[in-house]
Length: 213
Image 1 (tube, rainbow, N blue to C red):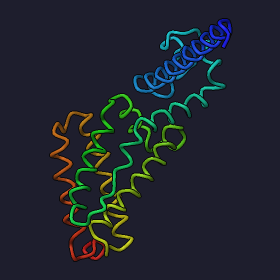
Image 2 (image 1 turned 90 degrees about the vertical axis):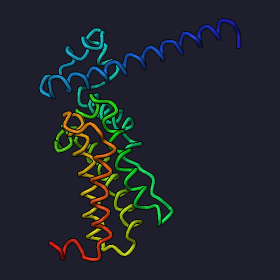
Image 3 (image 1 turned 90 degrees about the horizontal axis):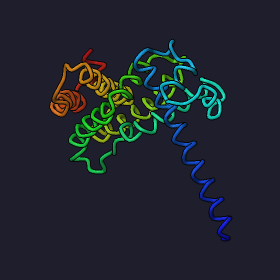
């Protein structure tokens, strides 16, 4: 590469890096605005000011606020993704222990970034927002992974019972995360252990949950 070509290449790379940094600051500013003030306060001016850029810069990176929100949702989903994909145990005799560990790990991963957790948890029932719709997709994947774990613990569980216990486990994860954020639960590992063992006892029961009800 000629010297002039190298310098041109480095300038191009520098501009791309700066552009990506600015885009990331804008995404963070959107998340901070939602966290502090709610969706109703989102304006390009407020977001740009919080990101430390001029308002027209917003439109260099996004066509609209809706597109920006979609990218915020995707970015947050990537951050939380590992929490929603616990490993299924290949060993039957360790399935219950792995399930307990998965609930604890999922809960801890969700609350690792308080701002992200609070924004996502507060939007999980709101299907009109990009964050709510993305949360639904993530939750569906987590529910399916929990169902697989339930079947590892009790291979002869009926589909209805497996689905019911999976829903209960997902509810425990979100409930513990919210309780921790509200400072009602400090020891997440112990809380997750107590709650999960109760579910495992139910899974292993000879009586179907539906019949017991």
